[in-house]
Length: 388
Ligand code: APR
Image 1 (cartoon, rainbow, N blue to C red):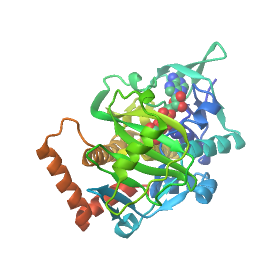
Image 2 (cartoon, helix red, strand yellow):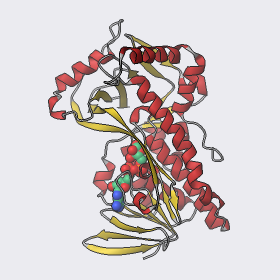
Image 3 (spheres, protein in one colour):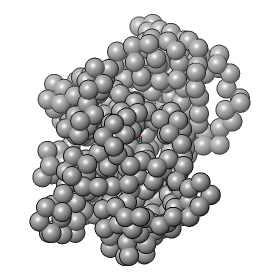
Image 4 (cartoon, helix red, strand yellow):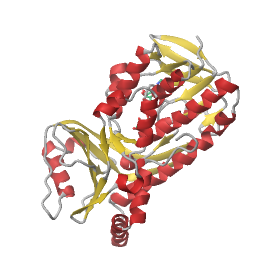
């Protein structure tokens, strides 16, 4: 069995890469260990930078996104009992869009299959040869080999691609907290996202649609979900979002809940020989900056452009620049995500001095145009050099 690009992983990175390559006449096979139902219903991120929506639209999967995505022009930082709006669009000229990753995955799978694309679900890659190059996978109890020109490792944090990069160097930061996230069948109590810093810990009011709210609470990394009744979750959220002017949070039926650990992680380089890492396989950010999905999209956009140049001209210049090109953007997003996380969460080890510094920092971000603009331009996404 042979293809031009073997793609390991059918998450947003692998599926979008396959679609971008298809638009350039380049063949690929996507090997995904889970079944279709599973990948289409995994609850993940949902905030898209304008550059991400542009890429999805150009890739031919923007129709439902344009119909159902909710365009946002600002966000709120809430602390000390008061809200402070950061007018993202006024400060940067750009917007962000709320559209869940599950929906992007559904749109991409449908588009690829309608175009005759080759996505193999329940196909688990067990070995990668970056030099031959080829991948070995198990499906229906049998072992198969897929030969190719290139391998794209889009197999997430726990995949098999990263360990196939000899001498890979990793950079990690763990945080002394996690997020308890819920989905609730209740109209959001806000039109724009609210990032709240409170003595009791961080809270985020996000949304999925005009009828579905998504909310998060800072909890301990080893938090026991069973200790959180619906009532306790809503009471804690209400306490952390409380304002001096009596703003109210409307509770509703909780349909999904999970505790997510927070981690920063980068692997360098993102390439070895004919193997290229993209998305969560190469880097993880804490969710506070809403960058994970957007980084996956920018990685595969850069990779698709490099492969397109290679197949059109034989030049490997962009392929050779891939890792360096991506890592510049990755480290910017890593810094921003770390910065937003430490700005807004309560570190259990923080002393009073550290807490006063944090409050001063928050006051500065909402009162200085320069500081607000810095937050805004990172949040909406910095341009992808050479591509946007
Ligand atoms: N063989 C085949 N598929 C694999 C293997 C393997 N050995 N290991 C992992 N996979 C699959 C997983 O089942 C998953 O569907 O690879 C896919 C990786 O997808 P994601 O984890 O979603 O990663 P990525 O596509 O890089 O998406 C980027 O953005 O919102 C953030 O972190 C969030 O997942 C999100 C990410």
